[in-house]
Length: 251
Ligand SMILES: C[S@@+](CC[C@H](N)C(=O)[O-])C[C@H]1O[C@@H](n2cnc3c(N)ncnc32)[C@H](O)[C@@H]1O
Image 1 (tube, protein in one colour):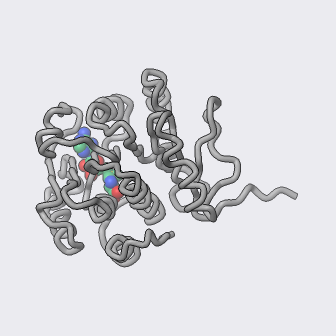
Image 2: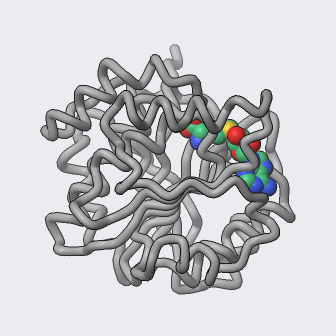
């Protein structure tokens, strides 16, 4: 499901170009991700976009197009799956969809072996306001990717975790729980469902004191996509957005 953001360049890509770039993230998630970048710009919050697991750039291009002048999109991937042509495909898609080399930094690396300083250097300084973690979905890798992201984050920035509650990775949320226990100033702001009330959602995390910057905005802007029960994290209810909100029908 595509939800217009009001930015013609971003909307054109998400509506018409998104399906031409192979990848796994949904149009719905890209619409909301771009809207979150817009919200941050409205708040005067600046910074880069970074992604671990860029693959051919489906989600990456949408986010890069939604950045403000001077901000960069950093993409990190092993770029070896399904073959060594994937990085060329990414660069071709970026060029075709208007993300020039002045706007992106691409690193062919194993994120698990990287240090935050390397990312900072690649970006030429500045913090990250939206970090999408979509690399290897294991406990060790996600723990390392979160450790890589955290020092780079803008104080009011967002960390978005892909494939939460995916049937193939049912224990990955345990890793997130542990990370949240160790980082008590962070919480799950929202859950972006994929294309229906099924698994494989994205979690969007932010610091607790930044929740008010986004929460009401999301509930109003995506009013038609709010799942009324929200997500019960025991100490708070996270916003849940889903393409077709409804409760299970019971007789
Ligand atoms: C599910 S795909 C990403 C899909 C993409 N974000 C999208 O929205 O279409 C996962 C990617 O993570 C990459 N990856 C897996 N482990 C990695 C690691 N340790 N470091 C960097 N990239 C990794 C894979 O090469 C693959 O391209």
